[in-house]
Image (cartoon, rainbow, N blue to C red; front, side):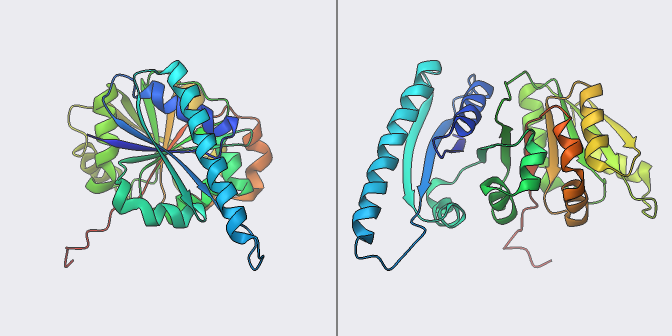
Length: 276
């Protein structure tokens, strides 16, 4: 059974992300884990153990409260609770072997999902440091059927391992995939070869390729997503140059003017048993 890890800090933003995921996967018999990580920002106090115990109690109480709220709307959802001490990224690294999640779900606060990353957040720290598929939900996003998914890419680094979780999602929700390619003027790629190679990773899925122009990558992708009624934007974290162009601070004000879209962040998988 697939396991989905819901991250919460007990904010309305985190709660909305959890509700979004529960609605998205309500027809699927998935196991959800609602996790809260709590940490002490200072050390050396003689009362450190007392503070830690109090925080542990508050974390447990908060999780039970959140569980009641989530079950009020999704009474049949299978949700485990996990309260862990430590910085969020360290906790996630530590718990990966035990929890074995297939997908992380987390919320983000800014006017849009992309703007939140620009401003810096726990969400961005998780994305940078945890090599796992992540569903990132803006604070006011409401789930809609995933009829169209926009994959923002330069086409060069899409391989089968990156494509697999997206293929599974597209098949599960009968979604159309729209590949939105934004390239630098000095970049060259054999488009026909790239399209044929990528299409082979998505048998039975409706796909189309679109080449966007414009120096402002975020504006181009958001405008494209709005024009084609996309419900989800997909990015690959491994493509550092593309990612940095996408999240450059100079476009913060422009991003605020765009609608907010849930985002699926993918990472390349490293095969530790491979000799290549």
